[in-house]
Length: 371
Image 1: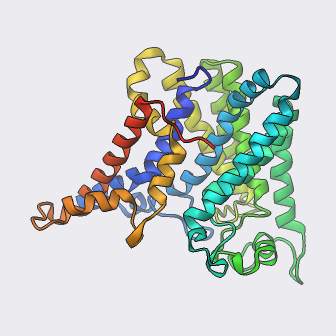
Image 2 (image 1 turned 135 degrees about the vertical axis):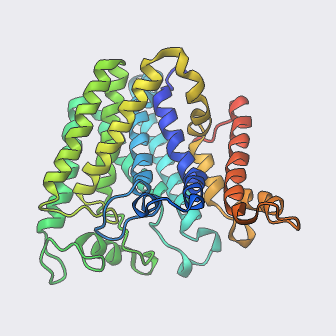
């Protein structure tokens, strides 16, 4: 792999995609099959209701966005070295192309773009589009700012989004409403998207400030790792992560933690856990030396081809199922049906294994999907 790849970042991205592409389903089915798993543990595999307690499953999307930011300092350093005096111009073209592709892919995955029927499409509806928004904001900052500028920009995004939701009145409503059917972020989405809004309480346009802040959190952490790898960086990341969690707990007295609109409280809470996870992975896979190369490998196989893994899992063919579902289904639910009540677990596990083996083949041949 190229020397700009960092094992901890690739492995953490791989863990996130492993959970998203079937790993979480396998764990959930294992727990359910025991018949004795507590309800609070099973709840960790479901999204929280509006204003409910943040779950592990709620962390998957922000971790995806955060890791995008964490890899950016390494990529932008390479752009700067190769681009010469006009590196910003060439980088801007690359960024705009990537943003456009991610946006279109997001519509393809969940926005019903393949229907070719505008009335059936949703404009904003997918994690890839959130990544595109955050990446665009963070890219502008990284092209013109060093670490201090990244920190200031992140704080500006957080404070701006908090102040807008808390204090700006709209359509005869006072500022500070945080209802699933009535808040400023949703009002702007409905106003600008019209019938192309996806009908959920999730918001995207004004919430781009939150996605930008989360991506910048990642870029700040990536910049720290790029500047100096080692235990000192682990400690600094741990302090930053704990500080974000504490800030979220304090801010919750003023602004509720709502994942659907990514309030500033939600960004600080999810960002804090993302930073702590990166600190742990940096300790395990960057600081502990070659002896951790083996344990990191299964995760890197997925992490180095994360976008392809996501698309192969989320894009469904005829029947509304992924290619892995179609390939494994006859083996599990065939005439013999040897698995009985364990059939769903066997199906999820074999589907995930088939995906991983495909990614392993591509990894061995250095074939990676990049945008």
